[in-house]
Structure formats: structure tokens, C-alpha cells
Image (cartoon, rainbow, N blue to C red):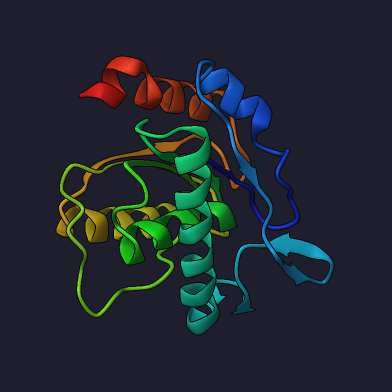
Length: 187
């Protein structure tokens, strides 16, 4: 499942998805919230300040959609999300609020979307977090906070900081490819 950043659409991450997981069934999803005409997965109150009630509601809707899509198109296959920025935050929220929906997540330039009152059991779940060392929007400290939160919930988290800002680079492609390799997914 591919989850775009603010202003993107369901097609934005398809080329990246094809490159890093060439044999995977790709399902691009478009965020249903518009911020000044730019699609997002949930509302924010300001830069880096999320509308938590909207996030919880939208995550529930997306979890239901994911369950239906995977049941219809990929029953029994591992479920992974690849999200960038706002999409990475939504994928992280799915793991924290609906822990059985995804088996793995690639979170590119994420922030901590919310801290649930009770941590879910994410044992057996895998996560890659890739932060940009010069990212002014989602600095590496945010990625590390999220990594710590997910590890506390039992997820196996791989965290990396790539030499970039908020944009994606070849280093992201390499990290995603290694993380999503069939032997990595099976293990």
C-alpha cells in the first residue's frame, strides 16, 4: 500500500514501489482531506500539529479499506505500507491504532503521529524509518522518537538517517529495497 505526502496522490509513489518491490501488488491510496487543495490523509492544526481526533477517525476508515482491499486482492500475503511524510505518519498511526492491519511499514520522513494511551502489541511487525539529516519538517529526532515508541510496542524497527532534506534520494531507494527484499520480508 502506497501512502503519498501532502499534495500528492495515489500515483506518486508507484515508481518507487515498482523499483523497491518489483513483484509486489501495489495499491496507491489518495488522502481524502484537502488542505488548501492539497490532498492529505488527516487534518493538521498547524505545521507539525496534528488534529488527533481526525487522525483517529481517518485511520479507522483506512484500516477498514486496507482489510477489504487485501482480502479481495491479496489474501494471505504479507501487508506492507510505504508512506512518505503525511502518508508515513498515517502508516505509523495504523500500526499504533490498528496493529493487525499491517505486517510491515516503510516510513519515509515520519513524525510521531500520536501516542496511544495503551501501546499495542506489535510483536512480529517490522518497520523501516528513514529520516533526512537536514529535514526541517520531520527532523531525525522525530524519527528516533517514533522508532522508540514502536520498539516499546514490540516492533522490530530499523532506523536510518539519509543525507537529504525532506525529499527522497537514492539512499532511500537502497534502504527500502533492502528492507523489502523477499528474504527480509519472510524473516
